[in-house]
Image (tube, rainbow, N blue to C red; front, side, top):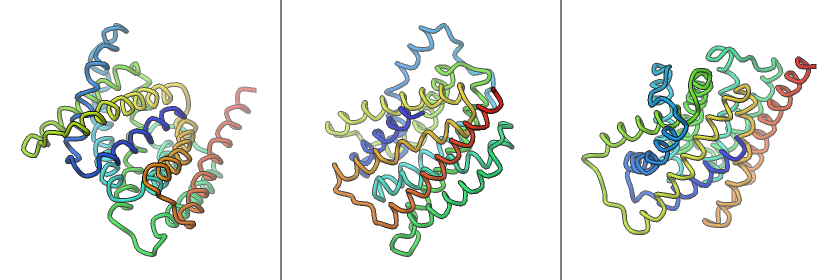
Length: 276
């Protein structure tokens, strides 16, 4: 999950580099279309079935994941990269809240402290200049929907192999986004064609590693490891766009990270105590 988070932030930086030159649905279509042959090759090489067993949860994962992706891509092109990623780090907090009901995995009772820290931190990031924006609301919505999508991945990993889950999701994403972009398709420029394979590569590798991570450990613990993305997003924002987060945003991010790390530590302590 640590490496997956780095892949997703790198993908986000590349999408931000593209700017608003391509419709969001077309970007989703092209990134999935480019990745499909490689994922199909993994299916054949591993001798896996083409279709997941739990197709109902796959459709839910598709619904939540695609909507989250759309919101996240919109936020990326309308706000600083670091702020967008900061808000996205509320995802482990949402996930921990919903995990007992969706996958039957309890977080610690004192995890509410972490959730409170995360919510306060998010408010600090979303209102550094006093006033909510559509982009920040989209980023928060993406985090909530991504948490639901990741919980569906956790459930799917109990019945299906990682390559099968990733291939099925990417195929459906390609189909839905392709239909949505038929009437608005814009031929990418040569510069955009250079970036699109890298976006598809980092996105697919991130999806694969994320899915594998959720097959190996409890959802709250895995989600907390995604806080690795915070430092990298600040670095990318500074190096490529001269974006320096506001002090209030940095303090808010620290609260969110502290909440996530607290969740991870308490969950690991519980697992260690139960195995001793």
